Length: 146
Image (cartoon, rainbow, N blue to C red):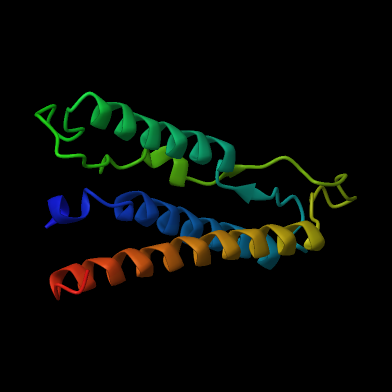
């Protein structure tokens, strides 16, 4: 079944949706702990995720151009990589403060957290919209309505 989707962007879009879902949980925890003394805001490594995503895309393209399947190094039919991204990209780490530390040693900024949650929500919506479009094209192909 996974080979059916390997010729699409679905595996990478799935990783984006998974990342944004996990990141939303982390950002929500930051807001929930906004008044907790000594709490340090956390986030997922967004820049590292974007870099890994770019590398996964370029690796899939370079292997496709060479005619090699990224899954088992066999001749390819133009499939993109279905390799999962490193798990450490989905682990929360202490993030730099967008503002100064307060007297209770908390580095809170409600405005920053809300802005990050909004950007994250947009990225997740974009990934899901693209996934729905991919599934729509697959359904049309299955029904021979191409």
